[in-house]
Image (cartoon, rainbow, N blue to C red; front, side, top):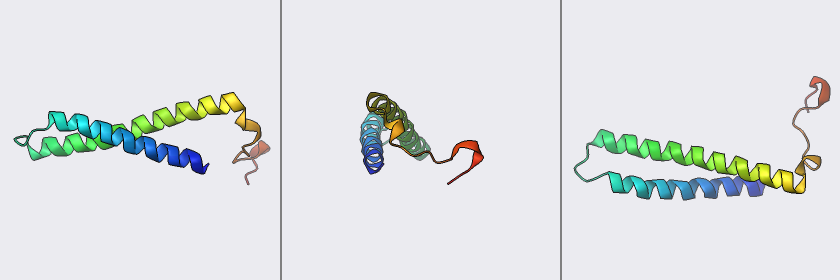
Length: 83
């Protein structure tokens, strides 16, 4: 669990830096402040979405490869009983 969280954080930071570099190519010093703010917010949202997408794909692949379902206890029990 902790390894997955660390992976997700590193993915998010990596995507943030990549998208920020790309946005830096679009934004010039003469750009309006609202365009700069919208671009920065878009960079944040895109980095979160991209990190979540890649993280979910990696977790599905790892779970299928090593059959982790038998090691992970479900959050909710069968028959509607919760832990």
